[in-house]
Image 1 (cartoon, helix red, strand yellow):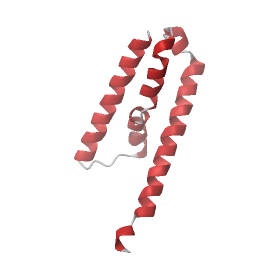
Image 2: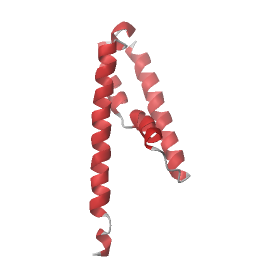
Image 3: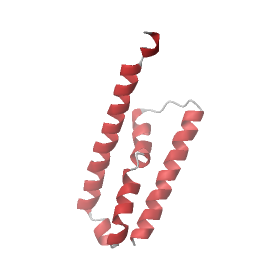
Image 4: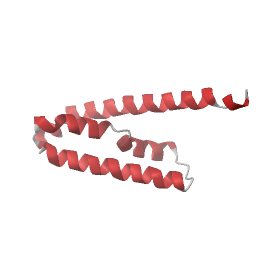
Length: 100
């Protein structure tokens, strides 16, 4: 079962990266909600979790248990938000640095 979960999650990851690339190529500026919906999948957390779960071969009733789903959700929010925060720090601290 874990292989099926991995394939499903990795497909969503690839789809979100393609969507993000298309948006950037078209200079599309996303709302926060649009950005967060895509970031949820392309931050890399879910594929990493799925890779780690491959050997566990969790049955669906365990994998989709509400407690595990909530744990994944919280972990993704924490990791994705910290990545965005770090990127903002880099952008704002480097803004105008080449003019000095």
